[in-house]
Image 1 (cartoon, rainbow, N blue to C red):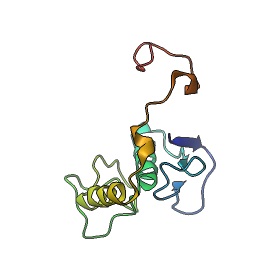
Image 2: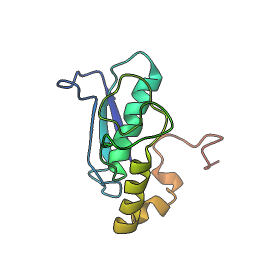
Image 3: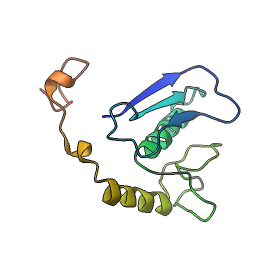
Image 4: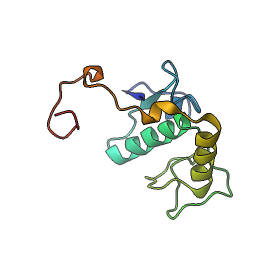
Length: 125
């Protein structure tokens, strides 16, 4: 499981989120805090994807990393929405999966573990 907290608290400088790297299967570290800094949901959603990328073992993209769009999700700067992970991010995540073999991603949560009640469409009804 992964939890992300949205907050209106202004982080220092250009920081828009914080997450542990490669901690997806750690019960205490599979988390991120994301600043809800923009009225446009797409910018905040990209920040959430970026922080979850860290949890999935992906570091920031280097200058040599590219993706089909102008900006990649794991870029260090956010000026406009990014819609793709770079080839570097995909390779880094693949290495993480091979190295760590995170078994938690294979577990289907029990219906008793759901915080909200089951509703049609969430695969528990």
